[in-house]
Length: 201
Ligand SMILES: [Ca+2]
Ligand SMILES: [Ca+2]
Image (cartoon, rainbow, N blue to C red; front, side):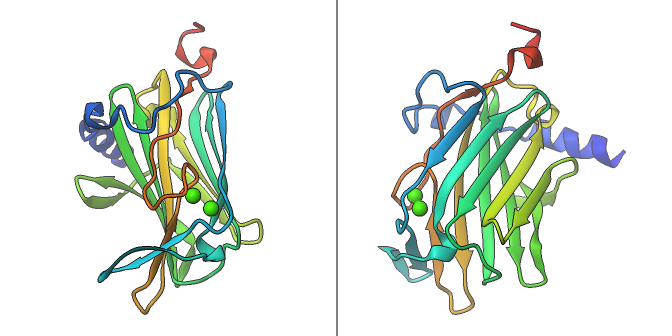
């Protein structure tokens, strides 16, 4: 019953994507069903409640690579950082756009939960979500998120917008994303579903 409830919530609260559909100038086709992104070293930004974004190298928040895989059963998102550590609180924010909407996922890691907890953001609220898997490997500087396609409505394609944020107790935050060298990420190119996942077309 719990699973059914979560699925209903996820389906009901998909937000129309039209407003953001033109961001990021995606190419119409991604190579295969895996999209690989490479990001520069040192393009992290710091900010706080009282300051704007300032270029500020921070290896513990520096995304170097990312990968989006659109598999037959699930969408996989991987982020590789320069020097991921047990430091402060960390948020991996992953938005998955489909032809019918956008779903927001967050993996939060921090003191006493550096293994990470995955949430779905639904109308500003963070709710637990079943069936979404994640892992954080601090030795490999890598976070992996796996979202079943059924939770996304078995989409013909997806685009992903992702970013990493690190906050430390003095109120300083850093952010980076694998799509550009600016503080704010844009959506990736489309990653189509494997033909077998939507009727063999
Ligand atoms: Ca980077
Ligand atoms: Ca970047």
